[in-house]
Length: 114
Length: 113
Image (tube, rainbow over all chains, first blue to last red):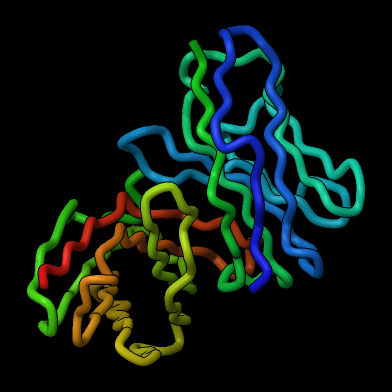
C-alpha cells in the first residue's frame, strides 16, 4: 500500500539553527499538509499546499516557517531559526483530493531543539 | 483551541466488549468529522468519517454516531480486540473552507485480553 514517508525520523538541533524536514507524499496525491504535535498536546494544523502554493496556513505558521516542493516528489518544511518551543513531532500528510477524508499521514519527524 | 474536545484521556475495556469513545465540538461550522487511530512511532491512520448530513456511518466493527444538536460524536468499536489498543483522535473540518483538520486531544484505548 502506498504510504507517506518522512526523513529524518529524529532531528536534534541547536536553538537558532535552520532545519529542513522532508516528506515524500503518495505519488498521485495533489494536496500536501504539515501538522505538528507538541508533547502532551493536540495535533495542530500548520499549512496546506496545492499547485505549488500555500492554500491555507495557521497562526502558528509564521515567517520562520516555509514550505516547498522542490521537485516532483519531495515536500519540505523549513524552520529558519529554531526555538525551544519548536520541539515537537512534525507530521506530513497528503491527499488526492481537497476533501479532508483522504489525508494520509507520515510517521512523523521528532524535532528536538536544545 | 478547544473547538474539538475529547474529555477522556484513557479508556480500558475487555476484549469482546464494546468500546465507546466520545468527542465534543463547539464550532457549528464543522461539517465533516473523522476518527484517526495512532500507534506509537507511527502517524495517525484514518479510520472512519461522517458528514454532517448523516447521523451514523458504519464500517465493519466501527460505527460513528453524530448528534449535531448536541455537537457530539462517538466511535463505537464492537467487538473490541487487543489490536485496537491505540490512541484515537477525533478530528473535524469545514469542507467548504479547505481541508484543515482540527484535532481533539486523543483517547488512549486499551483492550485487555
